[in-house]
Length: 408
Image (cartoon, rainbow, N blue to C red; front, side):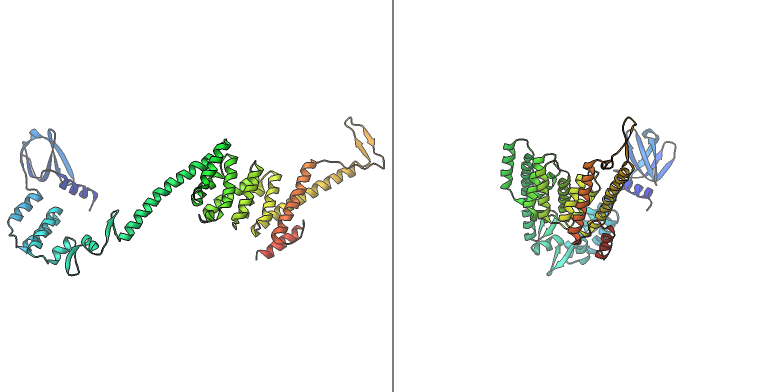
């Protein structure tokens, strides 16, 4: 059915009065239309369109019977025991979209013939253990109960009620846990102590979510507490699933590398060791790209403890870079020393001859930076040794060959 026709059909059923014929003062007669009063006007609906005319333009309106008027007339013509007649009228009511009259007529059919199958089926009855019952009556006969708009066993209903009660209780419990965990971030030692004591009385399983969030707190007190508690209740954390555990592991790894508090770093490292997730090393790998040499060294030390073959390629790359950089520095300084071994040029521009018994070792690069580079080279080599069990030192080709063999 086209949208326009659908709209016209809807308007037909929505109209409060029906008109078969409208005669205008001009003599024009409009038949098979529907008319609706709109203030001083009539709106005349015919087909998909309509027109508005002033009431003074209308000479005569001849209304037809509404479908319900027709039903009343038809129903009066039938006797109570006329099963075929009431059945036919019920179908007519259905075609005319009169659902209440449909039910009424099928009811009259059943009054005359209680076992009439078509009428029973139309009214939603089914045969159950020799009786005609509705679906609701069948459900009740089977011992089911209606709960939340569904039929279920009494046991299922009771379980659902209990679960709802538990859900409400859990919501209140979680609110209590959050309140005390937030208080751990207080600058007052007295309040922090009160919070820790109160949390100790609550079940650990409700704390995990807020402790993981606490790892990202700006308060070092809460970060430290969260790391220590997650280490203690690691089994509850592991129950939350891989996504929840990895969220905690990534936060702890970041704290190990970057937290300002040494206590927090230490607690975070211990928590990671207790959790012992197989992807812990992956959480540290991004920190190998930090500009800070100290941060990279801390990362390499962590990779020595959380061993993973996935760490080897970036470690080899870093070892190659630090080794080549140190070699370049050493070679460059030697070359410069060779150039100035016989004489040096003072700031004034004066050239001074260097006695034969004097050796010059120019320091062209920051000693602290060179020392850190050497420490990083050793840290990378130590991490590779811990992961592989091999002792290739700074021999890059051997490390690469070993990795190609190991990954197979």
